[in-house]
View 1 (cartoon, rainbow, N blue to C red):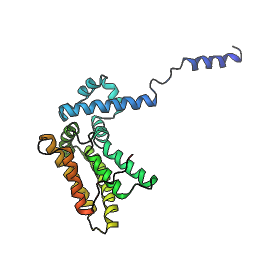
View 2: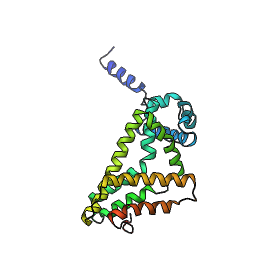
View 3: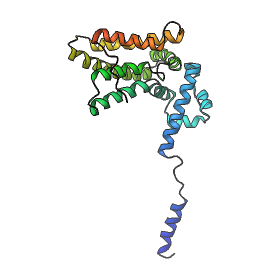
View 4: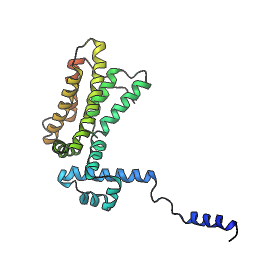
Length: 230
């Protein structure tokens, strides 16, 4: 064999090497697809329908794909919780923080009003989301990993809400227990949401949103009418 031949052999071996089966982007798309399929299973059949076989059927994939992207069924359940239930509010929190940092006309009142409004937006204040919540509330009580995820997300949301409440109340000379008020507001939203889903004649989404504003405005002063156009 001549001196050039080893290099030729190396090139041939390199040419035969197959490219990666999936790119990182494709992996993210598949992961999101599995989360969406799992969410649909939960919304239709509750926690009893949250099984590998049911999710595979809904997504049209093999069990191996779920095992590849999630280390366990609990891991997938936590991702469903994070992606489906807190996405709308978390997006609003991120938007509020961005506007506080970048926009001069983004007042504390506007930030709090936008955060309140996000709780009653159609993509969040929906029957589908409530069915998922009802499925998970019982599971949170008995599943340590899901309970930990819930505590982390709830605490982050409550802290942001309390911070926005204080930012409005303090300059107005209002003395409020911001963390307690944030907790009470979240409980009000959950209760009104449940009432609406069980019997829509009891309350409308618009009336529920008005009740949320009324609770906060009784403590911090006017909020409505200050939402900034995006």
